[in-house]
Picture (cartoon, rainbow, N blue to C red):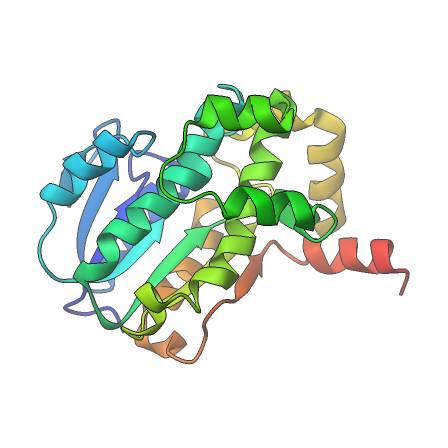
Length: 261
């Protein structure tokens, strides 16, 4: 379902991004990878770029072809670099890149955002999420953090809360909707990637171990990549504004506990 398509994938140097790029190539797609580090393999077209700044995004977009079939926003930070950088990459940069790439996406194309089970709290924190997603463009994030009294330890879950809310909003924004571009998310649970150790430092061993225990094992990049690429494909042409929980049943377990059923 990806044969002959051009898929733009961020975060291709390691983890989920690297596996997604490999699998997309095996499925017949032409892959353009973006990362601040060069990937260990040379099988894909590669653009070295940084999505944490508006200037970095502009530099990336200038190097892109005129037609792309899908954008997979996989790049992300664990939160160990502080809330400002985390929000810049995980949400505001991701959003800015998606908006800049939209005119190059073919009609019926797709944007797929890798969110996280860590964004589960968006409903409980809805007013904050609405306020922060309503900030247009690429804001001065340090000022935003100070204005709202945000804490470093909130960086990762907050970034994913905003991403999940924006995914649903973006599906109905004219920029995407008028061109038939679908916007969806995939939310992994704990995944055995190079930054899992960083997640333990940010979220705590107890939280990570509890999540893994609920479903029997941590996920792998190979568990997540097919879900991302399915949403990139025409097989998902009637799926829009959705969040696919690729977490071994973790969200279902948490829902049962939180909602008491």
